[in-house]
Image (tube, rainbow, N blue to C red; front, side, top):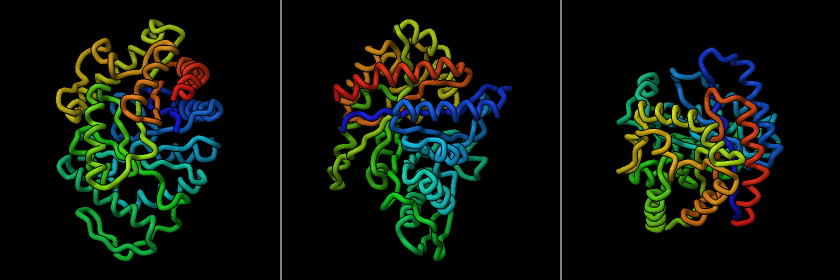
Length: 339
């Protein structure tokens, strides 16, 4: 399949922002992305965000299910160890129904201590909890009655009605940073959802590890292979860096300070300034620059669904929307033609 391109709408805003107006802006951006032909719209999830205000994932996706007519809606990602599987199964089944079968279920295990403490769990438990919850959710979506005991829940003849529209379940994209976490994607997901932080050079080796794990499990390489990336396009590379650089730098300083670097493959870090990070990590530049990078990602990694984060907390709405439009009109057609 040719490369599909989606957009991530973070829904993160500065302290003091008018959140009712910001929510309307988010909906307007989502509808614009749909009109421009983006394949998917992604909303992520975090809790207790002290440097910005964030709209929550499930309510936003539920609202967008009625506003967005064509693009798929990606819950990308749900911090699964923080939740109970029956709740997530029923919430997401409802969103899949409201969107007429356009939901993607993105799964991650999280990395921020403040979130684990607030939900009464620990970093140590996250892998086990995520795996158990995935097994339970898939059973709840495919079986009429489920009995299963996990480390943090018990399903005693539990049911999930109604079921999702998509059968046997909405696509399950599993995020993984370290090689060890790839096994969860192989065993319990439809594909590995590649993170936005790791350099392409490191990812080349990780994709080979993923292929080997799939072969060992007797599973084919996924038909849809997604990745998220920070991106910004402007008429020139210099203008793109000027407009996006300060926001990306601030975002990645926050990632580093809250422990995201510790989750990356060996040798990778988010420490350092924008110039140190931009090289093999972000898609920022002119239309030619960004198209060439996206084509290279497809050829080197096999990725065929690239989800672009093109706005950050504090960026003016018109700047982000101009970028979305330029990306749709001048970059995506070139990428599709070449792939």
